[in-house]
Figure 1 (spheres, rainbow, N blue to C red):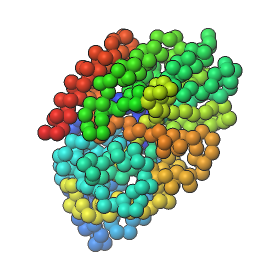
Figure 2 (cartoon, one colour):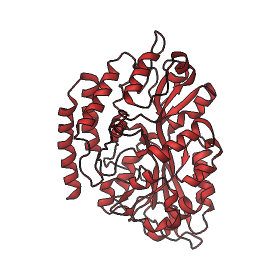
Figure 3 (cartoon, rainbow, N blue to C red):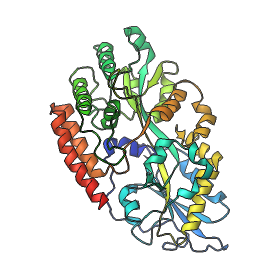
Figure 4 (tube, rainbow, N blue to C red):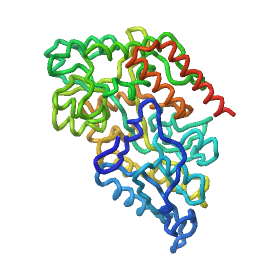
Length: 431
């Protein structure tokens, strides 16, 4: 979400349901190249190739200085970092169509399927080597198409359920493991001063689309790329979201939305679906009085618990004048330099390294709720949306969710309408 001083690395995770702004728009003239633009891969003064690397503007203090330091330490090329405020996604998508774009760039959840199908990003499959099995599987799957890898995950962000231990104990409520238990717990925890659950001021429209499907044992798409939730279990799961909305136990109209922990830390709600990035504030305000859970499975016999995960991924533009040099730099930074990867995840905000071995070494993640969060990523992590789930598909699903949750529309009917849109998008992609 937007930070006080810019956009931070979890901004794409705030776009629940896959409604990402990926349309092509105009871009600025500053490419970040040392030669003033259009010279990606050309030799710098010292005989090394010159590469440009683009980042969106992170909100966490020290991030810009860190990536500039990493780039300066690279021995085999002169790497110039461009730090881009504003609508980074649109700017980057447009620049990739020109000769003035970056050599190396990051993108939320990796490049889009249209970038891949359009031949705009290079195949990075050969960069991982023996490190492949060390990366979080759900992250790698999200940036892989037809067996080829198109981005290297940089750091993991996630959403999860947080709860006040003391409030649950006082109410005699156990941490819920099914959606029915969650609804019952929210009702029991609701008083005249505290609501039982906060899932956003929209009642969960923006963030529960994926968890609702996963809790029913389904997904946006099947493994073979077909529409994934024309199923009675999906209708039942979405109906439960409507039940929550009408239960009088949801916090609505909070001063800040779900991505900020203020409603939770100020005692307005006993449970909240939020993000890992809130942990520093939670630990400061409620050091021993909060626990974490995945979104629960639908019922005892259906589905599985889940946490949405995402990562900015480093990619290489095929319009670079030295693709091989750009790939070599990406490999150095995001595969070989494990100390820098750990620094990037842990020294600026609160994030999980994209590699399991580094997560195990991260001091902030070794105990308490943070250790539980790492476990959830490894055991229950689901890519926020699949690669083939396009913005148009995401909009159709989000609109349907809004009608189901807020207006009581029939889930089965709404699912059929979403299916028509998604199947048309899948056909377009296949063509």
